[in-house]
Length: 225
Length: 225
DNA sequence: TCCTTTCTTCAGAATTTATTCAATATTTGT
DNA sequence: ACAAATATTGAATAAATTCTGAAGAAAGGA
Image (cartoon, rainbow over all chains, first blue to last red; front, side, top):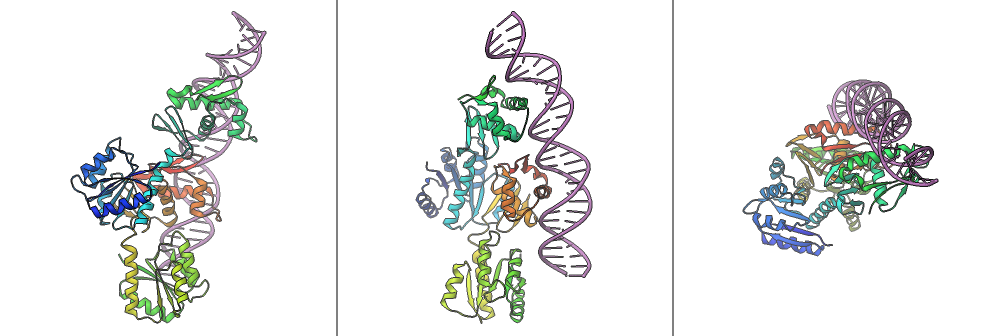
């Protein structure tokens, strides 16, 4: 699936240069020549916005501010382009949440590298198949994160492991034995009740999704498909 | 802000001559007399290294190779100095990643001109753009600088590396293992507590941004998005 | 060399997480 | 419906992990 980059830049030559190179790299390219245009095109939710600070109408800083304020667009990574490195202070002072910051002129390969990096960074949490989605519950195993209704809820290690293990085997009933050897290993001895207690804590955290975890008496637990 | 040049040369007379002239031009000068010394001093991250090929211990070519291999020093421009000007040397030297190549003897004004040119080239187009912004904290990795609320705060090397590493991976939890192998390398052994202590120092310096770094017990640390 | 800075180790305090316990509730099989 | 088995719950206890202040090493500079 090809990624879309929105270029916001008023100098036509630069636009062409960037467009050409990005397309060559397999990106889908959108272009805006001024701030207003940029805000419009941003509604298409590109994977990244390459934004020149010095553009007409609302300038790049203002555009960034508005994009970050709007919930629909606030997650889109932004790379700011600016001519002078002294403008950095300004950017910082405004605390506007750009993801990267590049001073012109910059070499194309370097720019491409940074674009890819920013996109990769943004993607990891969601895109990878290390993420399991169960209704409104998102389990991100590489980042030790659980989102419940888009809100991050902290799970201590054992609880996280247990939830993840059940989720990885959703649809299947997991015997208590299996849980013990999967989470605790075969060497460790813990009481059977320990599992219950962790299950309870997990359910508490899951809130309205608590009954995602079903108990099969005499056997174990499972998460529904 | 004055630039630092590291002179690597074993002949004392030449060192003095270069040192005198560079200082007169406003450069800050470091000196190393052999390869080992050079690699050490390079950790100070000078703005340029003037490197004689014919030095004791690891020779100039080897030093170049190592400097280019190490992520910390690979960006430092190197001017190689050599007595012979055979083509072979030239090819080899430049292939190693040296930025310029000068045969002795060379006139001082000419040498100064090349030094300035190399520094200028390195500074303008490419550098300065690997800046990570986290709220009011700006991490400038090419210049080894951290700004907190626009004020520069000095971070010793390990602390800087650690902060940068977490920042480069913001949003994701970095396991202690990964921290150890990324910052200390796989050969070195340091206690786990060492990480904590560095984290603490970083947090102290971050002041009101201290909780940018979250600890995930039993796993590691992370910087929030 | 001596002095300063940075890095690492140490050990007790503080905190968080994991486990056990015991009383209660639920399910299962007869 | 009743006993037996199994799970849930709230609270207490134990274990683990990290934080902290301070001290010892190591590295670098004067």
